Image (cartoon, rainbow, N blue to C red; front, side, top):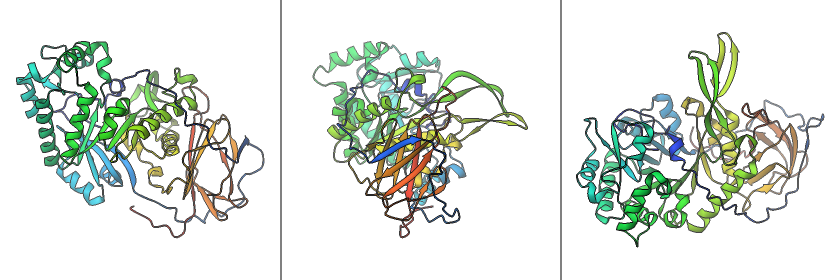
Length: 496
């Protein structure tokens, strides 16, 4: 979502997601075909201990790596900088509220290879309260008759948000002069700020399908009957990449045929979990009685309270299929940006609730993405410090098969060279027996969530117990994500 006010300090990673997630009935429910049959069984929790005795003191050096992707604020403090410095790609700050140069230098020194700055792809704010526009917006406003699709309004975004300080003007990206001027401006600004590329919000053409944008859609189609709007976006992105910038869109896969051939990265948003205000109020320590958000585990289901993991997997398979069909040679994959609410923990002194890290949601999102060998990051908008979880740094190695396997009713597994991930909607504590040639013939495995060592019962066979957590929204078991690592005593360790 575009920033609420580009000249004011803000957390550019905590966007107004209700408007950036434009919901459309796009699901094609494409299947990957029959999944590989797994030699795997599940059974209700039995009295027997599924794990033989293993010395808790024997904890080998589990393989670690640099995290793949993280989002951050525009003004990170020392703790946030240290956290962000552990990732390869960092998306933090906006064009008009960028990271300080000292922060950029610190992230480079820490080993961050790619820094992405936020921008709003289809439009810009013109300030009507006396504050100056940026240089490109000044040019756009002066030439708005030919440079924008709504020179005389309407201004749907500013009106919808109740902003009395702006008018939102939508670029005519079919106009080659507008495209080139914006490319020139962005290349100059991104390089001057010390970034490598851009994260574009509203990174597709589907906002034009909203009735509020009907006059803009009509204006564009009358001016450019032979150049679809998504193709104009593609020409714009192509020019940026030819100028040497990295480009990530938000939900570009919704215009997959036009956009994915020209992107470095794309993002989904809230396709694993999301946070939502459901009207719950709690006595929060230090704040008093306030409305608090909850985590929604099935945002892709028609009714999230009665949702299913299968609904989520259908959407993710469709996204993966779009990427396989249309991605260009430089496309590095989809990054799944999810949101979660804190885990609200009661305490007695002082009496009230305190926000805790929602580990179950973070690990579920991580394991879900790794079922598809993709990247994820979970934001906790209530308190971004609660995002910091070690799950991003375990090194699973590479997948050993083309896709994930079914565990039978309710669960899925994907095997990697140095570990595996589990995702399931198990309704109660369950013992899983995993048999696969990639499992070690002997030695120790490690349940990274429970921090418990696991012994292999027989060669290439592992048994473990999964205990789901209760979702306070539904009162039922929340879906579960787990990471199991194998002991690789000669593994090289990278980074902190």
